[in-house]
View 1 (cartoon, rainbow, N blue to C red):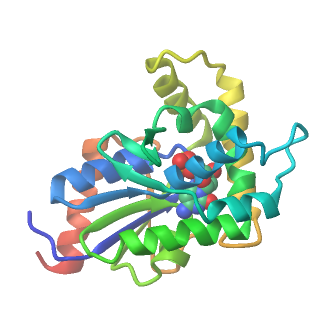
View 2 (view 1 turned 120 degrees about the vertical axis):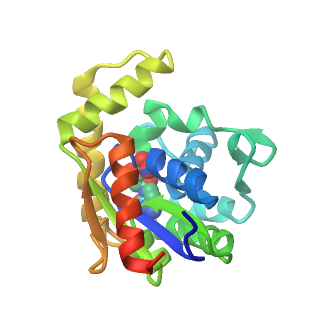
Length: 226
Ligand code: DC
């Protein structure tokens, strides 16, 4: 199936499988995949390692803002890089997951990430996932999906993913982290997680990846007559 040169924006709650689905779409249609959450996670790792998050979880916003001027986070063969260093593994830890939502509320951080995403997204044939791609980063994206799923199913999926990587997990901790992130992501002042008016909802609680891909292909055929 050959689809036109479009941008596909995927937004939705944490652990709804946005990035797995986006990677499959990228592979199926030869699109470039951009993971916007990885940039927020990269900034969070940077903030933790450089003391911009204090022990009581407060953020040194002026210090972090200044440091962002020289921060190089980008994508490459191993996934996400900070300068030359591959940070793909560290940014997926529960420590980073626990601090990323507050970091993503900082307007200067959002500006930093938006600038990078828009730069990467100059070309079409891109699939990008996040929380505000269809509403803020690429409001003109030709196809917008909003992904959701039952919270317990999401927590089970995330826990299984972490266990597969050899990390110790407690399902209640994972569920709590998801619910906290849902709350912060949906209630922050700037670019909260909301469904774009023209987004199509995909509830994948009871769908396999194959079901989702078939569903998407049907939607694309209908929408773009291809
Ligand atoms: O998709 P993810 O779980 O890797 O995202 C990590 C965090 O980054 C998430 O809790 C909220 C934030 N985020 C955001 O605010 N806006 C985006 N476009 C993507 C992620």
